[in-house]
Image (cartoon, rainbow, N blue to C red; front, top):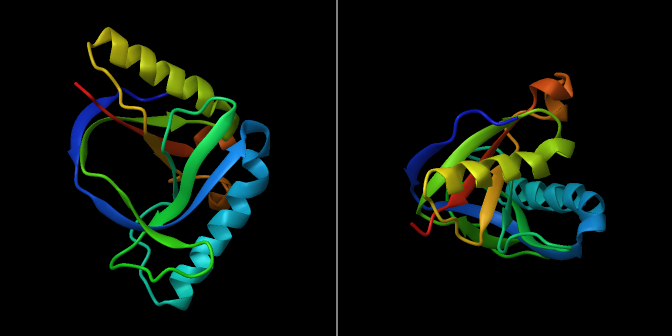
Length: 154
């Protein structure tokens, strides 16, 4: 389930990221270790995390996910290991919050896509999601909150 989408302008956001390209079936095995690697690099370099961690899908997922896992930061991280400076681009986007477990994210993206079509918007190929409230919160999965962000072509 998603909350009512909004069209908003977002500024560019600097980040620390790891780029990954994996089959869909491997996403759960690589995301956690990738995030931990990013968080360790951010902490080691003394950067401030300025928001929720995210996945930035560089292309619409199919049977392969081509994405970055990262965290927004103040400043610019120095490349170390697989961690690189990254960014979420400035863009006019559709933003909606998915409320519920991560297993329902694919259907939430489908809801957002249907809303975009019904309102005459064309989404870009890239998209991202912020994991604002998840398992680390101690809340039941029915209360997890994942903002979905989809840049618009028009």
